[in-house]
Image 1: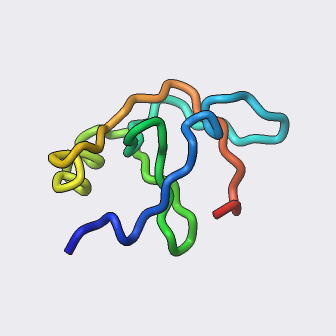
Image 2 (image 1 turned 90 degrees about the horizontal axis):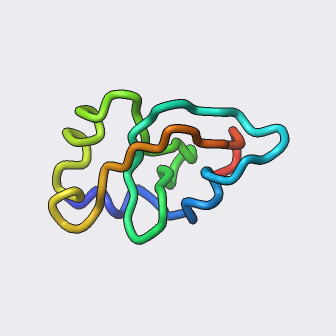
Length: 82
């Protein structure tokens, strides 16, 4: 079963542009593709981890089909926005 049906894309600029009131995540590895990052469809969980191996393992199938594991030194996120 493909993990693609459980995630939805958002523009990388949403998390790489500083914003007032945003929470800062430092040195995480994000699932990305074509200038987009991903959240889960249920719950809106950001698809990232501080440990690159976790992203590589969980998304191995997607990574072999054009997705990337991208290091983003500083991400600005708003919790609770799915």
